[in-house]
View 1: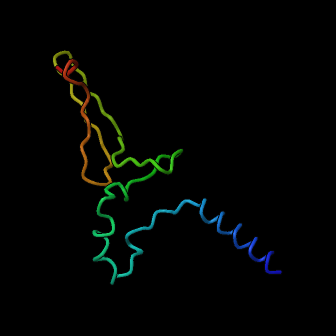
View 2: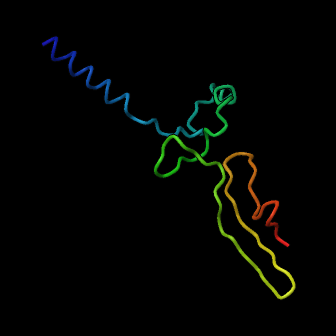
Length: 101
């Protein structure tokens, strides 16, 4: 009986070790612990950013949304909506060789 219990216990530990923790919403943190949240998350700036759909280890903190282009004979403009889960930079189109003119 003891060997069987130990085997089941070790199997359960293996299953628990392979599970991926789900994100914990900030609203669920008990009030007495809320002041500790910045300290706990220090060094983990991407903690509140969503995972990629096919990689639980990779997160993106800025997601592009609707892109609107307006082109006329003499000028053009664009606007784009972004969802940002923390302060971050968003790259504009172009580079040092191909800048919008």
